[in-house]
Image 1 (cartoon, rainbow, N blue to C red):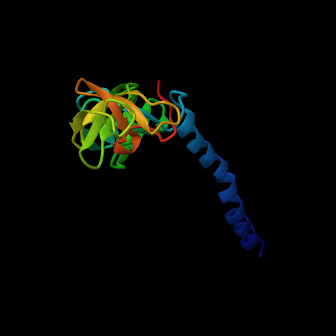
Image 2 (image 1 turned 90 degrees about the horizontal axis):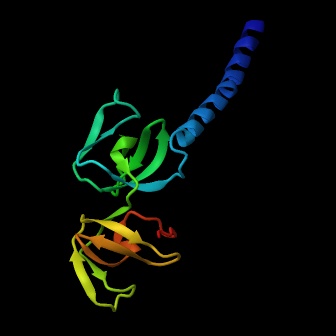
Image 3 (image 1 turned 60 degrees about the horizontal axis):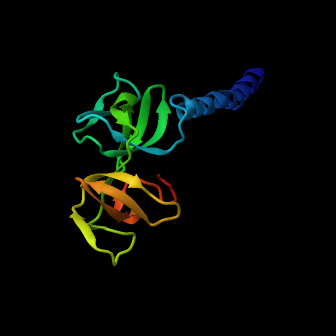
Length: 172
């Protein structure tokens, strides 16, 4: 009976004793690194970037991105590694040296029209295809539009027409 009681108490107590370590590990993955807020948008710094299954070179490469300036969302950090998500929802780990702070966008959906002002009735500046990458210049507070630069053409694009910014984010 004593052995059974001891075995039963071990089964009940040990899962709770181990829990704080798991919570600390998750919290460390969120805070160890840059100290910058999570999530946040960044862009690929290099023309070729490996996305790995885990935070280290010992983990296999799952994807190779061959598009400099592609926007990525940093969703976690572990040391010098960043867990990122692309516009299609693919997630993996990239070394911090492959990411930069320049804000970019990728056009989603269908062909979009860059406008001269923040209204659909303003003159078109350019038509841009889905998958085109551009630079975010400004996103006014509580605005539905962002000022962008796509291949040297500056104008305004609605936030719902691209991926690379948060709905209520202000970018100056």
